[in-house]
Image (tube, rainbow, N blue to C red; front, side, top):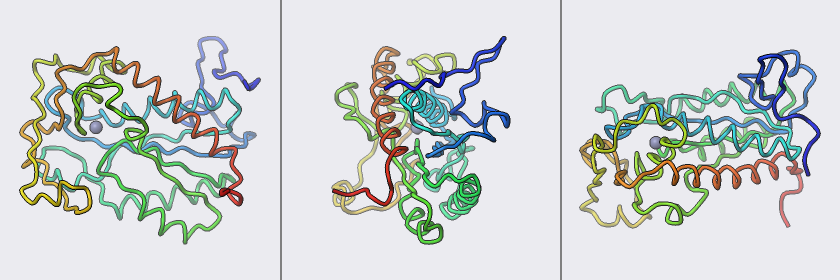
Length: 268
Ligand SMILES: [Zn+2]
């Protein structure tokens, strides 16, 4: 089903996407009803030698906008909030200008955002997370008690698909996936791949930490020499484009389901 609402309002020289709060205007917003707010959440941190500090933000912006476009064109009443640019970087304190927000600060930000949404009669929120160090589950549990009218949810776009189907070398930071995405989304910000390190990741000597059931924060400067984990050398913009299309289609379906769902009737 395609909505009759135009995706992009075009008047002379204007290209305004009505589902992006930063682009739309009071004239439009004051009379619009939204079912769901999307809060993309990134990080500002070193990404090997070759990718920009804003890598997670660029990914969050573009994935949110494209997914929202598809969902909006299918009738979902959603509004994408501006991306929060800083994430949890407690494990990278000794990596220059990795911008850390503590989890307690994230919780305070979210609490304030939720109060704004409630005043606008928006009772569903999805945090579109773009950074592995961000973990919103325990925050959502606590804020869910404080704001019982709200449906709070989170997703990690980078876990939405099996990366093996798109990329030859796996990793989780400035890897082939992220480098390919940036070659597709912001090629002017990517240094030549010969400038990149190989993203070798040192494994834990205590094997239980590598088995997935025991956890301790990794001290990033000790596990990687170039801040990357995952070899980026086989990255291409074609791989990035293919992955971007697939991940935004998948997330758009999720946005449509969420925006239309009756939160009092979620289980079968
Ligand atoms: Zn990243």
